Image (cartoon, rainbow, N blue to C red):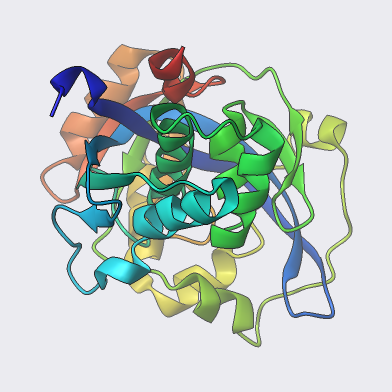
Length: 281
């Protein structure tokens, strides 16, 4: 195999800077308003062409059958949509926690779609790739689009935003939050009034899933309390990870040092453009 054909690509994490639940569709999916911003913490996806036409995963994730892995499902969806006969061996270097609300699985799927579209010369447009991605998960389109965005619908209707790019500190509790459990919980308020982008920019940054998550996972509530000693702690998406904004890298790293004896914690820079864009250019 020609090693020049091997692609190693970033799959960045995202934060939900706010999350509102504003309705529910007849099919049961919730209508949301949210704001996505990337951070410079990534999984890494390596794509190696193989001659037998199959899609294979080098190492499976614990508890996830190969055929259920989002990267494998993304590759198979692209093969079917573009009529591709080529094969690929996929290697996933996981740095983002599962169930953490950082979008790791969705980002892995998006990176796989974008990388294979180029590696296989499949020729699908970004809109076509986003359509494939939406079938895999509501967060996949924003990772394919690659821009910080205001999102509506189930998270797929995107309006790019030019946000400040602060330093964040992220605590990753050991809890694995199941999104489905959060959205089916009877205490989740589903008819909150929608807001505008201007409202968000003026400070409306609630996460409507927060009361349910902290009720189900006390460790998340503890993480928010500990983070808030340094900067107001917030929940990203429906996951377990807690984040806070800091004005400087130094302040963020001081908070990491103070929190690290108790928590898995890291500092990351906010990004309005996914690092995957540069890697594929």
